[in-house]
Structures are given as C-alpha cells and as structure tokens.
Image (cartoon, rainbow, N blue to C red; front, top):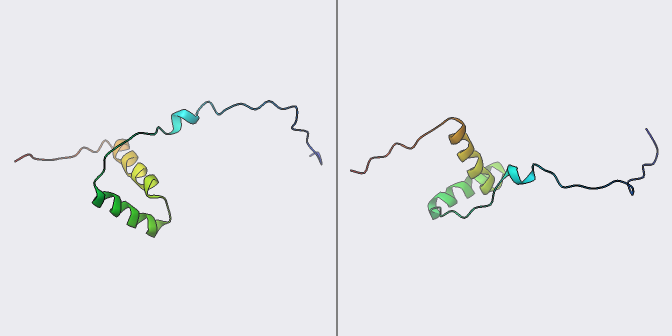
Length: 71
C-alpha cells in the first residue's frame, strides 16, 4: 500500500441506488401507535421510524394481510 494517496484527481458521483433505498411519504398514524413504537425505540435504541419501517417490511415480505370485520 502507498503511504499517501492523491484523491484530488478523482471524480465524485452520486450513488445511483440511493433514491431506490427509501422514499419519503406523508402518512397519518394514530398517536397511540406512535407512542407504542417510541417505547419500543427506547428499549431497543433504534429510531421509532426505523422500527415502523422494519415492521411494515416484514409484513410485506411475508405477505401478511389484515383480517378485519365491519360488523
């Protein structure tokens, strides 16, 4: 390995996959639901938005569907 590298001649470029990683949206979530994930966040040390994302991703990956009745 070289002792010194000259990065001044390198050209930078944006990550072409960055926009595909996540998309910002606006969604209405019940206050109680947000509080639940915030409590989990404190226990796990992970931001509550990431927990919600992971939960939704797990549901999508396992094709879970909500079973509800409007009786």
